Image 1 (cartoon, rainbow, N blue to C red):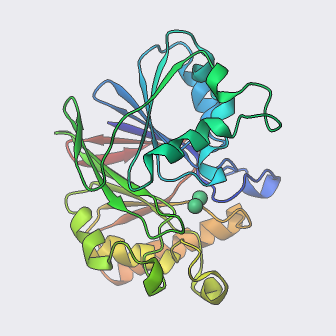
Image 2 (cartoon, rainbow, N blue to C red):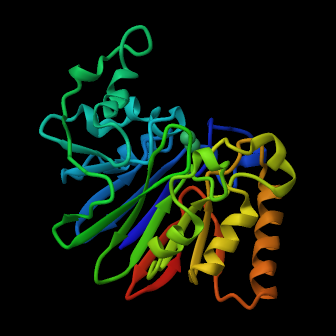
Length: 286
Ligand SMILES: [Zn+2]
Ligand SMILES: [Zn+2]
């Protein structure tokens, strides 16, 4: 299975010379798994993915972590949505099923010239019940509830080749009123995961102003990876105010921390265009 990052930022896109290395597009991850096309979130990064998929007529399974702007606002610019004969399946767990309409409703007048019900692709909602596994041929998909305002879903994708988890917009240690999934439950969810992609938006010194916003401290994310014995961790959903230099330095600190605790975990920073190949449970980055 192959995982490619098309958008790695949180909250709002950013474009400047200072963020060019990691990229400025909001959340979008593409996975090619056993001949199926899986997309996670439709942030602004999905526009380029759409261009890359125009000539590939296979069905697209589009999973949503939740429907905040930074996870849906690229959809109106996703070219496959305008292709006759294209099938797009929308999936989301731990969210009211009717809310998936938000993805198409954002195209209503006066926000966008083409209303969501006028696009040419066949867009259907695939049922996905909370805490239930779904099977797409030989791909097993498991979900877990995010700790995030309004809720949302974490996804674990598994085949005989390997397993990755996509967990964004998740506060590992939230105020108790926001707690859906505990630290121990996350560790259980992550057993056997070869590649973990996790929200790592804030620094410890920022906690007092952001506690309850639904995002993790970078220090919490690396602690979870160590506790869950994850071999490959990708830090994701970067703060739009964090520049490349700062992300480089945070990454170095995280790698040193893992060394200091003898944790066998390779930490990387999510970067637009990076491809992770998972094969027989080993992960290669190109
Ligand atoms: Zn977000
Ligand atoms: Zn969010």
